[in-house]
Image (cartoon, rainbow, N blue to C red; front, side, top):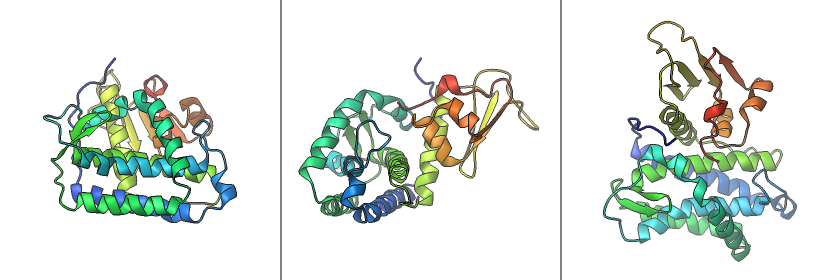
Length: 265
């Protein structure tokens, strides 16, 4: 069942641009410190190594510059809340592109430097209303940059999971935007007002069909932290495991979100 249309949250374009650059810089700094042994480590993303994952981060950001190089499409095809549900079909192609990129660029720091320079140059005079012909569908630059926070934050978490002690920091604006977009996507996929999902300090959404809550303590409440929520929404953590590990607090008969997760697979 396709997600229902929901009013899209507004994001400050300047803050999102800064957040994307800042989080990319955080990852670049960490990747620069990795040894050959660490780069060869496995990740939780199939058979990708840390080197391939690190290369993929540049691919996710370079897509902004690459799409700005292309002719603008005639009209938008994709709203921001549509994006999380449009990514799965591209998984195989992305994996192939990532492996080729990692093989072609043994000097990862040089690749990161080129990517950062291109991004800064291309964004300098590009308005947020500029349409991009992305692989998932035509969308505005402003919306596409919000999707880059999801890519950057999720893959920062992947890198931290793969390399003990790496501890790449999360830019607050990037983490907030990623959390909010995925929370809003849940509300679009499972419309309703019976369950309140809280991801402090960034997001609170109402979702799931059933009796609508109007005042006082909601009868169905789910609460978790931002990174746990992002892992659930992107398929990196199963709902049952999160409950078992007490990473999620869920109360009420409509507080089981397992039927609606992950949002991105």
